[in-house]
Length: 228
Image (cartoon, rainbow, N blue to C red):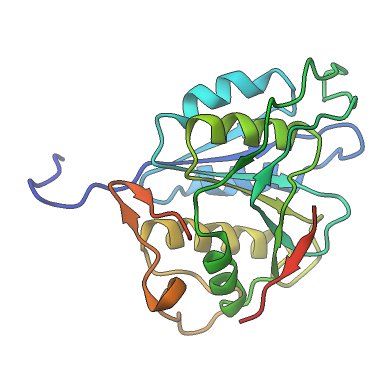
């Protein structure tokens, strides 16, 4: 069916996750991407990536075609969901899932143009344990984030902890959060961490977070706790 003239276009979102890698034989973002791919929100392309250093260049080219990009990865030592503001110019000599080592680190730091602080406040208000981080690490996650930001600054990397048996950090809880975040970036009604009446999506300074020209308007190493 053709879109009616004058009707708003559904934003194109690329959503990615990673497969297993040394030390993480079961990556929770693999299950998350499978769930999103089985029932994708409108406009979403869900892509499960191998944890290979070589995936970086291909991903950068694909990200250029999207209105926004959400990238999910696992941080084994995390206790909360982390919204990453910055990809840093570092790469550890750590083998990927094939045993390969990085060729070179990103040339410089890259910062997302998305309103991370406002999104984190909204996520916590919806019941999701979210903190802001200022370094995406030194592994494939960081390299991929830097490559994506170099071609599309409307991107956000989200590190999730290993899953718990229940609650917002369970597999089901992480899926609810992912769908909430997709909704927040496309102005759809968000999903709360626990069944409840959805709250309206409020943006920074009392304005709704919104897509402008198909891309979310930008907001004016440590992890910040974000209050309500």
